[in-house]
Image (cartoon, rainbow, N blue to C red; front, side, top):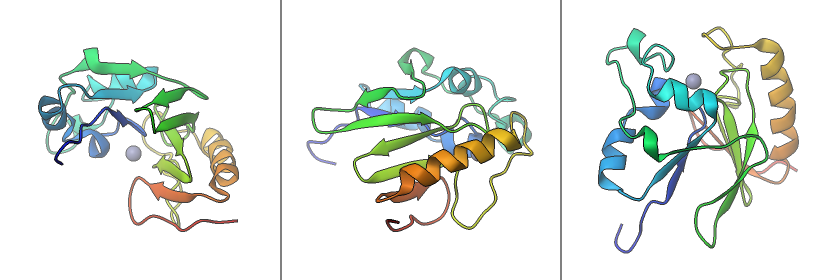
Length: 157
Ligand SMILES: [Zn+2]
């Protein structure tokens, strides 16, 4: 990554399998910021809320001062060329945000093509998940979907 720097990470939600590695990354990239909502910020430093406590390795984020709180509709200026817009997509978890960046839509676990949204974990809510799915389907038109697991999905019209 010569002449490149990481300005920010857009967190789709604060479950352990999406945050392991952040400490290493933030130690290397001293200017990087982490974008998430209020629920995400809390879960990042609470191993029970990010579920890592119940997994192999309890994990907390060591750089809470570099978290920037965002919410539905906020624009994140990553640099002069890239702005992302956050979209609240709760249901899988309260910390779920999706991001629109040009013709890309990052959905995390709020939408994984071919799979039902998991709402059975703490903070999950089926009604919210269905509302979020509707939002995502509208935003997905003309965009490539990048889910939190599995391969990206081609543009839909
Ligand atoms: Zn998850």
